Image (tube, rainbow over the protein chains, first blue to last red):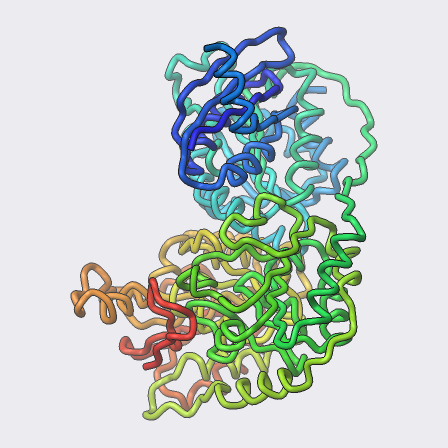
Length: 87
Length: 546
């Protein structure tokens, strides 16, 4: 199963490493990882992962990271729709 | 003031009185500040001793434990303790010195990327990049360590930050924000409880961490619902509660495992369905609906899907669970199970039967004693055969299962609670893992009592080799152990060895009544195993006994 997240995080040392570590450790494989640091305070992350485990198990673990300010799981069907629009 | 002086001031703002640590080059400015500080620093003899002492301090008081180490090897020696604290949700703040900011990334002397190293073993970690952030980072560390699900937080402070100048400002300590829960969820849980015919409360470490032991016991005595506890939950349920069945899981009591396998409602209170508890997960409490109460929503559905899950502060949440139940038949069934599978201490022979010794020790110790275990067979015997009146009195490395935990964590507990008798129960394998902390006992004249159960083996590994590896005893023979009595005496402890069951009673009395530290070296049979046992991959009702 493929899942996507939109994340806004504090731009602190090791923020990106923390996100990547949790993804791997909790049993998911990274597909895409787009980062844009719009200012010195925050960083926007678009993340796509695949994995067989329930995505809620990753969502709640990412959500616990202290430097994550906002986390949004993009519903699978919304992702399919937007993919359709792009096509 | 300097950054180093500010660090100690902030610790004092958070009520810290005792710090465990070991100095070194990159943390020397902070140690220099200790020289004039009112804070008491306890020099341990290895950084792992320092972090486990901080853990023992935290576990025995429910307050934050603080430890310090220098950069490089000092910091790397903290890793095992931080992992232990993370898996058991223990509030610890670790402060490490780091090389000068200008040298970071150059492979300087004693430079390790401590922030990178900390990611997998802390709840969160900081590196201080600007001296003006130092106080805020430390305040955040204390808040994070204690809030929500507690855990270890590391703060890495480069040497230039420690020697820089900064102003000290008062800081009002914020009250922790506790999550609210909906009455609708509470009603759903209460409805499940009142309709259940065979409910069981599955009590974990979260109850003690939330300081909700009284609320739990009020809930149990009101409803008379049978209860079982995890290793970390031991002490939460009043041991005299008639429907308390003891520990659940791999080495749990037969009564608790059978009751949970038969229950139709499992009320999980601050526990996490660990594999040592559940056995084969898809066979665990198969007929049961599940109510899961926790402070950490990431635990909901991680391993077992709950029917009702409520995140909340247990002091408020547990009282809300009280409802009328009609379970007379089940209570009788549970009482019968408890009577049928009660422990027996009538082992044959003249040798010392460790469960009987621990049971007698438990009865003879003062009411509010602390027992700190190491890891292995003796740890399970303590969990099975000793009684505890509070989770803060039973210090045991649960999630990580770290050998070497017992001695330094007892040091922390003894310093935190100087008027309480602290007892270490250890094995000959575990004891040697942090044996250097006998030096800490000597230095601070700590009156610890150490019971060393010596079977000249790595007993638990040997037990598995016997049962699951065709008796191929690879690297578990410790028959070349040192002379433990001589070793203890070298550090100023009184010590004696016993071999026979007829010596046990007097030896326990002598240990308890001795002023100052004492090591009781107990020779036990290498063939003694821990029973019952749920074999790996088996269901909890398939326990085997020796």
